Structure formats: C-alpha cells, structure tokens
Image (tube, rainbow, N blue to C red; front, side, top):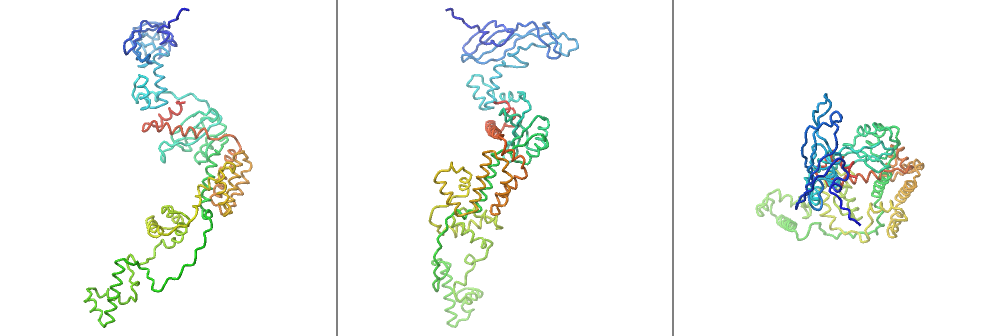
Amino acid sequence: MDEVVPQPDELLFSSVEGVLVESVEVTDTVVRVEARTTVGGAACPGCGCWSGRIHGSYLRSPRDLPTAGKSVVVSLRVRRFVCAEDVCPRKTFAEQVPGLTRRFGRRTERLRSTLVAVALALAGRAGARMTDVFQIPVSRNTLLRLIASLPDPATTTPRVVGVDEYAQRKGRIYGTVLVDVETRRPIDLLPDREADTLAAWLAERPGIEIICRDRAPFFSEGATRGAPQALQVADRWHLWHNLGEAAEKCVYRHRGCLRPTPVQPEEPQAEPAGWSPWPTGHRFAERTRAKHATIHALLAAGHSKRSVARQLGMTLNTILRFSRATTPEEMFTGQWQSRATRLDDYKPYLDQRWQEGCTNAWKLWEEIKEQGYPRGYASVRDYVSRTLRGKPQPVGPRPPSARAVTRWILTHPDALPERDRIQLKAALANCPELTALAEHVRSFGHMLTHLHGDRLPDWIEAASTTTELPGLRHFAQHLLRDLDAVTAGLTLPWNSGVVEGHVNRIKMLKRQMFGRAGFELLRKRVLLAQ
C-alpha cells in the first residue's frame, strides 16, 4: 500500500479556503509558512460592494498555534483592493481571510480562540502560566482584553427563570444572577439587587411564565412589577432553612429543659460565731485588725483620742472611725466594700447559667443584655473570672446544645442514628413545648417533601397558636406575606437549586480573578465560560 503523506496546507489550513501555501521553512525554534490568497476579489467592509480591482499587496505575519514544540509564523501575502463604489468613503480596503485573519489581528483565529478558551477557564494570572506551557506566552492583561472583546451570547427569552443574589463585595455590594432553569444556563448578571433593575429586565422579556426566587422583598417586588403575568415560586430550600432558624430560636428559648433535673443540695450549715468574711493572711486585713485592737486598748486605758492620734501618728478622723467600729469587719472600705452594682439583679441568672454549663462570658453578657442589662461586657467578664470560675459545675453529662437538638428535630426520624434518637427522645420528654415544635417541623417537612401545598393554610393556623414558641409563630406569620409564592413552591416541582449552583460558581470565578473581578469582566466569564 502506498503511504499518503499529508501536505502542509492540509495540516495548517485544512478548514481555510482561498489560501495557497507556497513554502514551509523549518528551523530549530520556528516554523515559517509562506502563503498567499487566491480568491478573485473581496467585499468592501464599508459599503459591501464587491471589487476585483487590485490596488497593491503587503505581507502579514500572524502567529499560529505551535506544532511539534516549535512556534509557527505565517507569512501571508494579502491584497488591497480599490472600492468600485465612488460614493464610498473607503477608497481602498484590505482583504480578510475568513477563519484565518481579522482586521488588525496579530494572531490567527484558531490561536485567538485557544487563548480565549484559556482566558475564560483560568482568567489572568493562571491563564498566563498555562499559555507558557503551551509555548504561546501572553500576558495576563492580554487574556483579560480578549475576554472583554467577546460579544454576549445570543439568548432567547426563557420560560422558567431563576433569580438570586451574589456578592460582588460581601456585606457591601450585591448583584443579581438570572438563570434559565430548564436549560440550566446563566442568562444575565445585573449590577445590583434593586427591585427597579429586576423589574426593568423582566419587562423586556414578556414571555417569562415562572420565576423561581427566595423570599427577599426586593425580588418579590421586582418580579411583581416586571412580570405580573408570571407565576412566582418560593424556593423550598430557603423555606426549610428559615424554618430551621426559627426552630433553633425556639429550642434555645427552652434550653433549660435540656438538662436533667438537678439534685437538690443540702441545706447550708449556719455560719459559726465569730466568722469573718475578711480574708485571713491578707496584709491589709491583718494590719487593720492590729490597728483596731491597739486603738481600742489605748482608749480603754484612759487615753484621749487626740493623745492616741499623736502616739500612733494618725489623723484624728482615722482614730474616730476606728473608735466607732466595734469590730474590724466594720472597717470595710474601698475594694473590701460590698457596693451595689447594676449587675446584682442579674447575678442569680448568671449563677444558674453557669450551673447549666454555659461558661462563655461573652455569651452570658449577650443573654443578660437581651434582658435589659445596660452596661458593657467587662463587668460580666470580671464577675465570671473572679467569682464563677471558683464555683464547681454540676457533675454529670453535658446537656446537648440548642443547635444539636435543632439538627435532630430537622432530620428525618429514619435517618437519625440510634444514639441521637435516644437523646432527642430524652430532651423532648422534659419539655412539651419542644415536643410540639418537633411535630410542627415534621409536618412541614412532610408537606415540603411530598408537595402538599394545599395543607399550608392549616399548618400556618396551627403554628400561629403556639404562644410558647414565638420563633415558630413569627415564621408562620411571615409566610402569610408571600403566601401565593410559598404555596406554589410547596406544590410545583420548580426550585432555585440550579441558581445556587451558579452563585457558588461565581464565587469561584471571583476568587480566580482577585482584584480584577469587575462587573463587566465577571459578567463575561459567567455567561461565556461554560
């Protein structure tokens, strides 16, 4: 069989028509290809008139993809034509080879498309490092310019659109991402999350039938104003997440029920006679006791107060204070005086929480602050470090945290491990309010899983009557503000899961781009990097 040797024009320009390869020169580092165009004419880019009248020619040297580890440079002779239209402002124009060159281009189209693919996947710095491996080194700014020069993809009006927010600068600047839920592709990025911006975007696309969103008020208002004909669907994951937050507040409110009933301590013994609250061995206490005994001994011997003051080198007022005190304990002053503070009313609660196992001073301060404590954290920290640290905590197993109990309640009973099931049963046995909370949560979970949205009004009415569970009651009342969207979310199969996936993808792209992740550049990568 005769071996067929491929020609250079077949290897380099197999998909390009109208180009003739004249010679190929191979050196140690470069492959230089000389070629020329063979078409009879070209269309004027200004007026579109076809012309075959040649004005001149010149050489272009676009770079191409490397081959066999060597860079490829194409020496292409192109012609300049004279426009046949007299009124055309262009007197002459240069021909372009489709699929090979473009105006002012210094790279072939396939090299440009390769660099664009690298830029969309890796952005600036990482993309520049990758091009070094491909032996087509370019700067990071060149890759970013290639991304910015790309046109937006052509899209059609979606039937089901998902809306969510993403952070351009977390906590400060937020935007809106819109995704076609049926094709699972991003449609557009908006620079903010204002209702007016979303309403204007939706108004330009009247064919939208369903909008999947969370329960944020700006999305609700924007969807209502921009697409009144569309059905709004509240996302089920956000509903379950909000229910979990409300349940945790309820469990934390009844956290005292999570600890077993403590054993009543024995009655404290009466303090012995002569007991002194002063610390023994303290130099200030011993010095005060000695002065008190000396002053009272001299006064008992018949010395006057002024005489005692002269003998001991003290002022008369000091002698008067010691003489009036029948015992040294009455001389408490300064750091030894039990002064009333604003923390006194909250000390029993702090002692109780310490016995329940809460040893975090900041957490204790936040709890009494909610009860009306007006002062700062320092006084609570000092009381914990000086007083509570020395008190023993009750012996026994540590009670489960409010978050752990909430997790057990939110988990399907069949999916709970045996140990967690036993602990949850023990926690619910001591608190009928938490038992009612678990029943409401599981009822909502069954309704959410099996898409029984018609049961939502009855559930809201039952949850609104739980006076001992204010967190659950507030959650149920908030559902009434967006009842139609919530009912649709618990009835229809649509959700915002694909939108959340694109939000996470935007986070990844932002981390790749670092400080260059401006809105326009980020929008290009989100819409084009698929």
